[in-house]
Image (tube, rainbow, N blue to C red):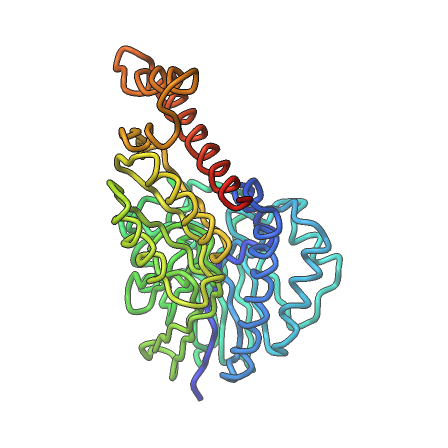
Length: 386
């Protein structure tokens, strides 16, 4: 009879999203709560697909200091699947002498929640499935913790599934950490039918029997195919695993860039944002804007960004590479004489004077933008009162 598991990792319950808190605390809170809702979805899928176990390959929690309330909420989110849950400590939540795992154990979790805090085989599914864990007992380990799997003995009829958290040396798109390295051929050395890995936050096959599941709820501006769980079916010991990616993440994190040089470019930017697709409130966007624009275009850009900030879940915008250079038409709209004209001329000169420091030029440009925006706001108000 085939064995089926759901492979997940890097839940990082309790993740702070501090940079988004600075922009909008409510939206950061939604990102935090969604992580638990995604765990609920994993439980639903496990039940729907009648899997034998859910294996979570490390970093279940963001830190060992996660609150007891979060531990309890995690257990509640898992309650939708009555089969075995096998949870491995990772580098964020290492199985130290006092940790999230010791506190979770004191909460007396249900019997189907198995804490893989010791490097010894765990038999589930009526001994048809043997889980071989390599828990981290410290955040950084210079040795390969999976080496112990080579000597683990399991029943001959049991499918052998290793569970580990770390980096496959030389195989990740970017170097992860200099610690917690795992041998590329561990599945072969340990006679594993499948090696379930965590630490890399994207879904990534290393070899036919070795996969990173990635975080099920995206949390970074990286194009690494996160937001999945893996349904792994193994017909019998020695059979090749069949791996199916199942999307579960709600939010989509996107990094975008736009180059602006005039009002006509704003239509292209708006189309680019619209191309993210509905529902728009599921997108977290980092937008980097560069170019040179006049003040009229800059004001129109600010209005466009305000509209999209209200539409997307989060829109973070970097404009430090966008220069504002007032045109003659900009200056004519504001003032043609008097003190205002003198101030504008001086600010314009400072903004383009290479002898000035970069900070001084930036301040002059920002002052011009503020004066222009305030003038246009006042002008529109006057027209409305007529």
